[in-house]
Image 1 (spheres, rainbow, N blue to C red):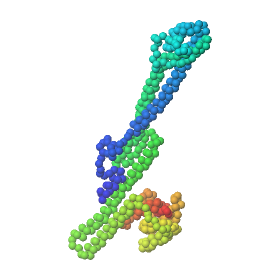
Image 2: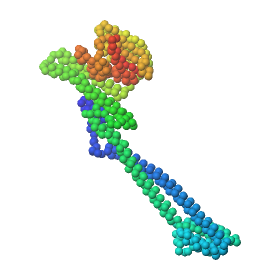
Image 3: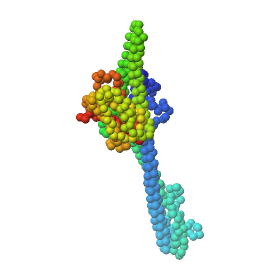
Length: 475
């Protein structure tokens, strides 16, 4: 049995009794074949790419606006200079014809550096062209074609161009600056996010260290933060609540283990002692028969204890009562009273059944629970008093439930004992002469039956006596 309790205790602690252990520093995901990822790395990469995309689009839009502005200024500047050239040719043609036009254009050529001009007559012949020494790298020059009428109605066409290398270098510089700004911004956001996220995850790292420090010897340890974090506090409260329940279950399990060992030790010692005495010397058939009968009684106590433990185990695993058709609970109570007729008569006690409700319950379980309560009341009731069984709808809960209670007049029960009335193997008065014939699971079984019917239990003691009962859901 010790091995069974060891496995149960290990399960309650959330760790297997035996099993492979992972090397220190190795992630449990590696053993299961599932790849893990870093929240910090994932957030940093996502924010870096998001920043890179956002700043890239923004800087691209800025570059496009600057380029369009520069191109518009180029067109306006070249157009203005071309208009000045046309006006100059008109004035010169009125003074001296085409010769004067060519002279004036050549004269002003030195005053417009970085430009190129050529003019053709209407028949396509060349009227004027700037010196061939002026270079014209096509990608960096921007020009405009024009047509104008000189004196005496002579039409000429031409092309005026300007070197825009300075604007091209300006746009290249702007593009490089924006590109560097985009990459630097993305890198800065990535590094800054890494630092900020790591600092932001410091409370989680603290909680991880505190959780790692919890062990079977330190089940009273709880998680806490020096500075409460709003998002983490609900998780901390839930985890601490889980640890409270786990600690209570572990303490209860240890106590249950000790109680079971104590309860089993006494009858087993009796059986072994009586058997050893009977085997010590020759015994008559009648003496051996008496020994076997005594051993049978002890074994029956052991069987009853084991059956009760198995029933409580099934209840703890979530067993639900099997309900039949609705039946009068008062009629079932009368059957239970009739079953206890002999001990009632022996103690000169009377029983009054008050109220009556029809409900769909598990009849054997209901009668067993009520029988345990009535038997407990008979043991502690004052001789000649009356025991009252009350059955009525429960007005406390929101669901439709029925309330069943047994009241007896007897010695008062201490408040600290009332809180433990339904604990397993608990005896409020272990000094009573009949305490050894009861192993302290009767009221624990009542609580289990109430849970199987979606109900609860309670125990109260005042000047009117002791009231112990349970509720059952009617559906």
